Length: 291
Image (cartoon, rainbow, N blue to C red; front, side, top):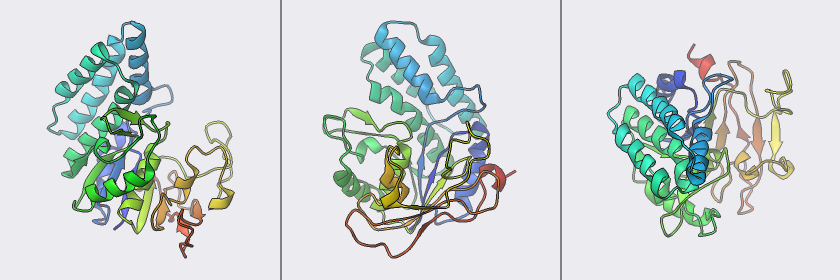
């Protein structure tokens, strides 16, 4: 039961995302992130939402930023020609900002809206992680409870799009993982459904020895063992996708190239040797696959 985690963060990739998903019927469960940068000088939607939240808390005007967010999603909805009540959703967000701005709720709306749009376009069921990704009241992820509730939520479904990055506590308050936390949602979902394959698609190659935005042509790291995982990694266990369940493979494409990228291996939290290599397949990025 393979699962595809897709960092859906480029406007021009919207239809290509659907093409990649539909080419393999085994790609039944999708985790989407918020729209990212369309160009080097662009701003990620999550950053725009953060600016809105900070302005609302400080009593500053945020209408221009809010309009930019609305316009960004309107472009996506128009391009994909999906029937979604975007104006209603944006008015709900505006009301929260005006009356009771909560950081977790505001920042999570990028993943929420992007996932709803993708689900509508694909004809998949939308799964709100506020229903199945649990935090305690201090904002700490409850991985064990999340795995049980996510399994109960996903197993009856044939196909689903799950929003990444956030969940809720017992009182219904939205909490977010740290930035890049959609990777964790994808790992938890893959573990919950005991996926045979966990694919991580993005527009850059997997793991490098340095930041390719800073260092020219950094050397890719081909193998990573969980016990030697990078200390500065925010959620290092997602490298081996071993969030409390059975082992599975993990795939991330290269950036338009055909050479293999990274492969991970390690033990699960239960201590059992998975008995196989967590591997990245030889493949291309979104751009390379669908020029």
